[in-house]
Image 1: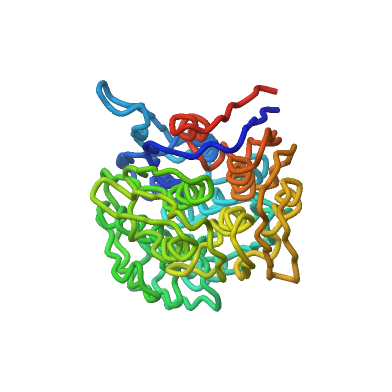
Image 2 (image 1 turned 60 degrees about the vertical axis):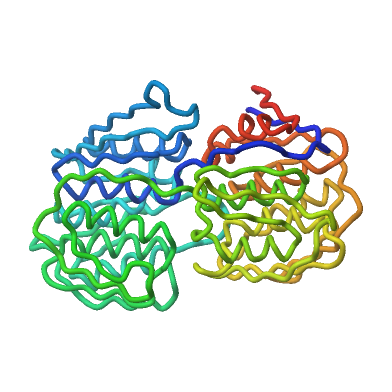
Length: 429
């Protein structure tokens, strides 16, 4: 099993290109099931989750062609993916595939909308909370689907097609909003989704479906209105830049010092996180090229943050922020409101010398003068990269184990960091 070795203490200086967003690419790939024509996605990141979803879509008979960078392109240029779902040979998504990645459950919506039936295993994914699919299934029921759960599988049927309806989510859910949008896009009549997720990745999916001939309005607000169409056509769409990768590297720069241009990043996708970083002492300049990040000379200031759905501070940056605050001059507090088990990185950061006290969903971090390198173990995707941030600032050598979590969401992390002066290498295990 691969490990990552880091010798900390080097400031980061240079340019880090930001890849396409994992959390946008996955639902966009699934949306390819909605049409018999080709959907072409540009700026698709090279990630383990993307490759896994390719296998899952291939199981349904979907033909996917991936082209790398063109001659003269930047080495980090995203992939171009052609998705051809003209023929769907199987409407079952089996446990052995779906259990490896939670987002693959979303295939239930386009399969049901286009084929009138779907059999999809209940999902797996990161062990950061129960994250039930009740809201997904309630949305499909509202659109007229017959839902049955049998032997760990969801059996969904709509032999006469889905019908537009009003869907009111009791709690904001990104996954359920994705599901509702895809299902309603081919339903008969009008659908109104209330208390919808407002994340940029939701907007990206809706914009792509509109390019395919869909009729969606209000994406990015809490009320989305959809008029179903009989069929969707092919389209070409560019995946938006990854706001979580952007925030992660911005925090790494704030942690280690130096100055880095995050090329291709968009500040409007993570304003709350950037405000928090500025409060912690980072200087951030937004331009057409991306975001320039550097730490001011005063060191890291403590912060007080609560994770919230967009446009609030994202839960996917909570672990990274905690790593940053371990070196703050004072006491920080982080309250996690989205997932109940998302503090598994705390014990590993403590191995680096961090002082963190947990009380339920609230973490109190006492900044320490220095961190010291140690062997640590990744427990999930975002937790693993928080350990990278801590190790970059720690004295001496750290060895991060179980880094396959990193490969799910960060493209060429070691290459990007080493190009900016970090002493980091992957050791094949």
